[in-house]
Amino acid sequence: MKDFLILKLHGPMQAWGEHTFEGLRPSANFPTRSGLLGLLGACLGIARNERERLQALADSVGMAVRVDKRSMTNKDGTSRVLRMVKITDYHTVKDARENYAGLKSHETIQTWREYLYDAEFTVALWNQPSAAVTLDDLEAAVKRPFFTPYLGRRSCPISRPLFLSRILSSNELEALKMVTPHGGTIYSEEKADVRMKRVRDVPLIHQPRQFVGRNLYVHGGEHVPE
Image 1 (cartoon, one colour):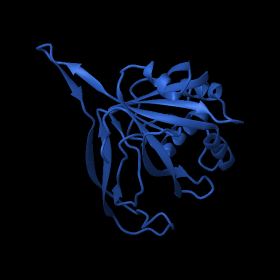
Image 2 (tube, one colour):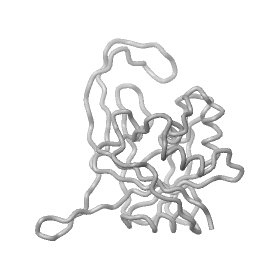
Image 3 (spheres, helix red, strand yellow):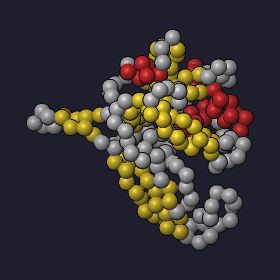
C-alpha cells in the first residue's frame, strides 16, 4: 500500500499559468506542476530565492490531478452538470517586461488574463524515493500555511481548507476513487497504458521562468479540450 495526501482546490476563480508574455496570460484547464509546487512551497514558507529548498520539494513529490465532475439539483428535482467556464479579463499594465529573457521595460501595455470559474480539483500527492520533504511535512504545512496560499494567482483565494485526507491505497487512481465527487478526468504522472498528454510545466529551479516537458497519463472521465 502507498500513502497519499489528498488536497482540494476550490475557489471562485483559479488560474494555472501556461507559457506567456506580459500581454497574454493564458490558464491551463487544470493545475500545472509548477503551480502546485508554488502552492506547496508557499505553505512550507519557501521563499522564491531559496532554490535548494525548492529543488528538494520538486524532487520529493509525485502528483495526480482530477478535474472533478460536479452537479447540482434544480428546483424541479432534475440535476445538471456544473461545467467549468474560462473567461478573459482585460486590463492594462504599466512598466511591463518586454519578455521573460530580460528586465527591459516599456510603456503601458494591454493585457488579457484567463481565469477558470466553477472549477474544482482533487490532487493526490505521494513521496518519491528518498524524499527530503515528506507527506507529513506537507500535511502540516497545508493545515497551517506559512504564506497565504492561493489558486495560481493572488487574485484567486481558496474557499475551503486545502487539506482533505490521508489515504493508504494501491495507487493514485484507487485513492482518488475514495474521494467525492466521484467521476472526472485524472491526469497522473504515473506511467500507464492509456492516452498520454505532453505538457511543459516542470520548472527549472535554477533557471527562473524556464520549463521542461513531462508526460501525463489521462484516465477516464470526459477530456477537457485545450
